[in-house]
Length: 46
Image 1 (cartoon, rainbow, N blue to C red):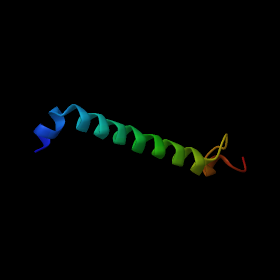
Image 2 (cartoon, rainbow, N blue to C red):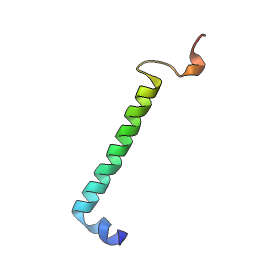
Image 3 (cartoon, one colour):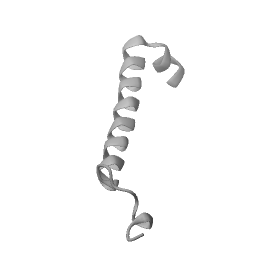
Image 4 (cartoon, one colour):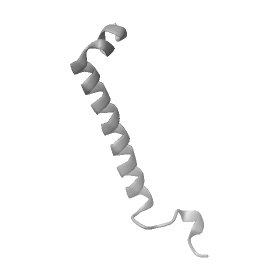
């Protein structure tokens, strides 16, 4: 089933798009978690 899905151009496009979207959302989440221009907690108060 996965070999047939991987060979289909539309399915391959959507799976690749979904993968990139998940990675982009993860990067945005981590950027917001650490804050813009803030160092992680271990470097505070030095």
